[in-house]
Image 1 (tube, rainbow, N blue to C red):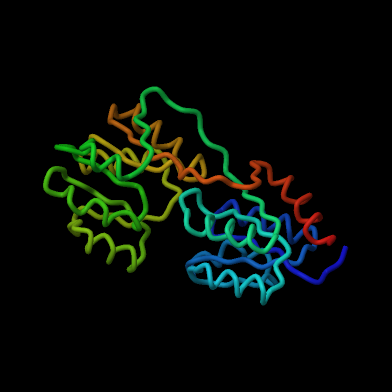
Image 2: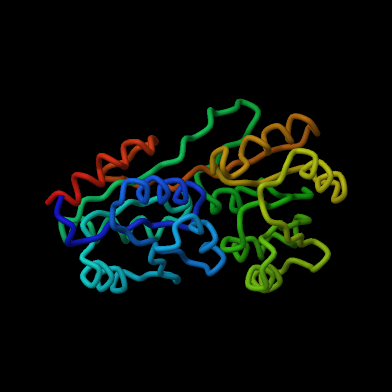
Length: 257
C-alpha cells in the first residue's frame, strides 16, 4: 500500500472516536478535524494523531485537502452537522476524492411521538403555543426560538460552556430557564429536570441512541409528556454505512492508489 497521502476523518462525535481507534489499530495515516477544543479529548487514545480545530469553509477544505494530500474522506460528523457534510461532499466530487459517510443507526419510529422535518415547521405551526417546553436541541438553533417566548415558556438545556450560555441569553432565554449539563443524561435526571420545571413538552433531535433519543422516548412515556423529534437533514450521501467494519475496506481502497 502506498503511503503518500492521508485519510481525513471529520470528527467531534463519539462515533468518530471509535472509528479513529480502528483506523489507528490498522496503521492507516489519518488526521482529524473538530470544531471545538473540548472535542480533542475524544482522541486521547492516539497521542500521535494530528487534530485540526475550527469550523471549515469550502475554501478551507480545498486548501486542507491539497496541503494534506487527502486520499479519502470519512465523514463521522454529528447527524445535524449539515454544513460540513455538504461541503465535504462538494469537495469530494469536485476533486475526485473518495467519500464515505458513517451514519449512526436511526431508532424505530414511535406512534406516540410527533416527528417533524425541521425546526422551521415546529415554530411556524405553533406546536409550542401555551406549553412549558424543554429544548434539548443544542445551542446553535436557539435563536430561531426567540419569537416564541411570548406564547410559550421555554427552557433550554445546553452544554456547560460560556459560548453556549451567551447564545441562549441572546436568544431571549432567562437565566433561570437555562441549565448547563454535559451528556449522557440518564432517565432519572431527565425526570427530575422535567418535574422541577413542570415540563409538559420536550423537543429533541433524531440523534439516535448515542444522542439520548431513546431516553427521551422513555421519559415521555414515564411522565406522560409530549415529545417532538426533529428528523435528520435530508442529505444525499454518495456512499454511506452504519458498520464501522466497512470503514476499514474503504481506507484500504483509498490508500492503495
